[in-house]
Image (cartoon, rainbow, N blue to C red; front, side, top):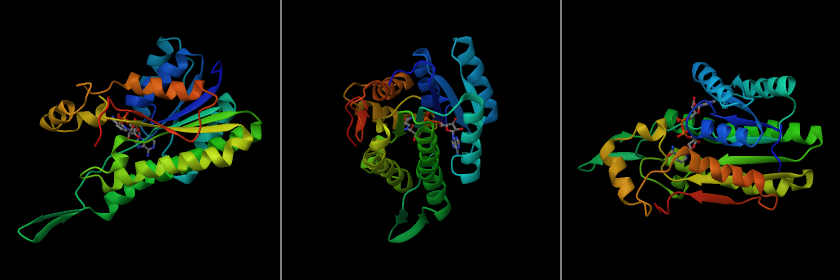
Amino acid sequence: MQLDKRVVAITGGARGLGFAMAERLGREGARPALLDVDREALDEAVTRLHQAGIDASAFVVDVADEASVQQAFADVAENLGPVSGLVNNAGILRDALLIKARDGKVEKRMSLSHWQQVIDVNLTGVFLCGREAATQMIEAGHAGVIVNISSISRAGNMGQSNYAAAKAAVVSLTSTWAKELARYGIRAGAVAPGFIETDMTASMRQDMLDKLTAGVPLKRLGQPEDIAESVAFIFANDYFTGRVIECDGGLRL
Ligand SMILES: NC(=O)c1ccc[n+]([C@@H]2O[C@H](COP(=O)([O-])OP(=O)(O)OC[C@H]3O[C@@H](n4cnc5c(N)ncnc54)[C@H](O)[C@@H]3O)[C@@H](O)[C@H]2O)c1
């Protein structure tokens, strides 16, 4: 897809990977609509993008809330026109072991609220935003691209029952949407990043990060621009749909 002047909604676009995607797609001429729950970070992000000559706009949304998502997408359409692209990137972590036990005694369990918060944002949010974006694309009668951000953790990762389950599920949504939406000229792809330097990984312990990096064949964490490059590839390649790009420096969990 040619990105020139196309409206591309990017959830969680106020920082980290989403911001790098806005910069990357914006440089190719797209008009990024940043959708994020953090109003202050959104304003800062849009200012930085404007300084780089990118025609970006900000919309406050909670991707886990149906009414909020419907309102935000309606606002995007009213202000910028219907979306041609969506990157479902907003995500959170609430890590905990399913069960933590010592000497046969269970000390801690993952709470239902930590399970639910991650499923709500990382999975239901993808469903809600994907549904709004596809609706706009179909009613506008133009082609579209939806990219879902998964994770290397989708293979299963210690302490991440909630996150790994959601990130595996968004790959299933991707292949389902590729089949269902192709008839409308809509493609769907996923990117599964490895460990990338953002606020999300900055919250991990340094010794854990060092251990992780040592196991990466390329011996470094990824940069947000590496993931933005994979997202840009999915937009550019009109024969790509239903598949997931693994961009992780060669790491296998
Ligand atoms: N950083 C990594 O190493 C890594 C690896 C694999 C996958 N990912 C995935 O990439 C995506 C982006 O990660 P990141 O590292 O840039 O994270 P980040 O924490 O730096 O940024 C996430 C953004 O999402 C926003 N957000 C959170 N909840 C929201 C909600 N309910 N509604 C709207 N916006 C919300 C936050 O305000 C924030 O701006 C996530 O889906 C994450 O799971 C990241």
